Image (cartoon, rainbow, N blue to C red; front, side, top):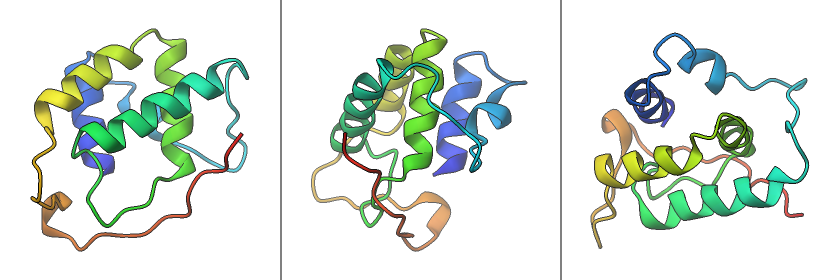
Length: 111
């Protein structure tokens, strides 16, 4: 999944920043609490309308932080457009990144 996100970030022009945008640690914070709801909505939209996440995955809080960063950079909508084109939702077709089995992550907390 990380490679999929990195590829889209690079397509958006964040070649040098892609790794740092995807880096989330215990010290990571949401840039603006007003963006939390929007970040959650975009993340759910990505999960529901694209195959950027393999079918077996549960959403990870990690990607909530990444989407928040994209909102701060005014790049979240463009990220979604590229994800929709690159990883379109295909009904009934499971999508597993790089042939790996799906991994499970803890779901992100609700507001």
